[in-house]
Image 1 (tube, rainbow, N blue to C red):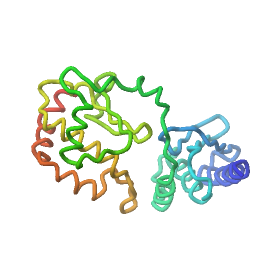
Image 2 (image 1 turned 180 degrees about the horizontal axis):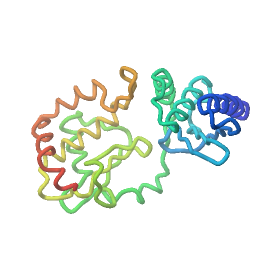
Image 3 (image 1 turned 120 degrees about the vertical axis):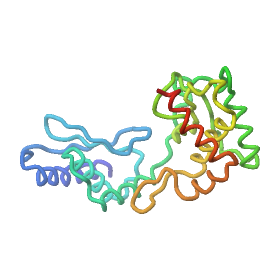
Image 4 (image 1 turned 180 degrees about the vertical axis):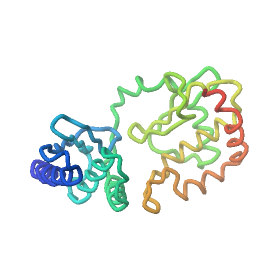
Length: 235
């Protein structure tokens, strides 16, 4: 089935590529299903034309959705805005991707232990769970400090490893406890309320997430502190 699917996609996307690009009359599109952990689809320029890789964990039951994803990538490589219908179709389709279970042996390479110099993330996690989630824990959720300080986030949740990582620069006595609790609370919400399609867009913070987030007692105070101070630390 996969071989027939590959051939059908390659035939269709090659035709689409040549139709959209007058200089590609002799080029072709190759399709592969690849073992990505989080990426759903990716495109590469090759000497022969284009290579489009789909995540092999995508359900192989909707060729029209796969075509929509391929068209999106072709528009991307041509620096054109993708068709809104294609974006919605593929986002809804790829939301059904089977969960990726990261290799537990690799977690030690991604993070340091939860116990830092000033904050123990496991203790922080337990405190937030008991205070704000009635002691009900998301299954097998892990925490840890980043290997090095980064500029891109305070903390983030990785679904593939069911892991909350805190930026190691926040392991600092200058960071108030209520700010750390808010960040942990926010990332736990990501584990409880996953991203979903809202008004034709992928929302990482859907309405139920936002409603629950505002219930954190120090919500405004913590966000104000981050706005005024944390960026100075991350620079």
